[in-house]
Image (tube, rainbow, N blue to C red; front, top):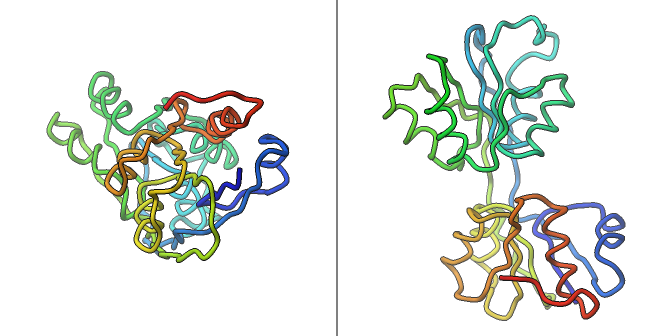
Length: 231
């Protein structure tokens, strides 16, 4: 099976996990552009990060590297996804709560927050789940855009058997110039799969854990040796 990943990974690591039955290629469908946002006081605030890109933009482009982050008296850090948690850990920060999806995090905050003041760092195309739900429940909340997602709209000349998507914006970028109708479709999570459904009625195989390892297991199950995966 010849499979296209709409995000770059190390080809050797993917080939090792998928096996000889698969050939992998990569195409960039989006570009992340950090924004120069002026830093502000974080004391007494609880921080929300919904993506690795938000973490990277926060540390590299918004708040000066020579600031003493560890001394800042923020309340707690909340994250969406294990990869976001790992990105925060690289900078020496732990997380109070990690949710699989923004909706799950929103429900947790509404049920458990103790008059915290929240600030979410995210991209311009982030889902509006938190800013639609939290203020309605009298939760103090603001959103700070720390990066822009640029859709690249690549046009492919090579034929593939399958394609993997990792974000709704990646789906929109790919689908503008390329058809999905003759492709087996894999998705990192349900939010991304919902976007795919705007462009095709084909079955979509979605990672239940919303991470790369689970997605690769789903793909591997499509090989003759692996059997068939559930859709």
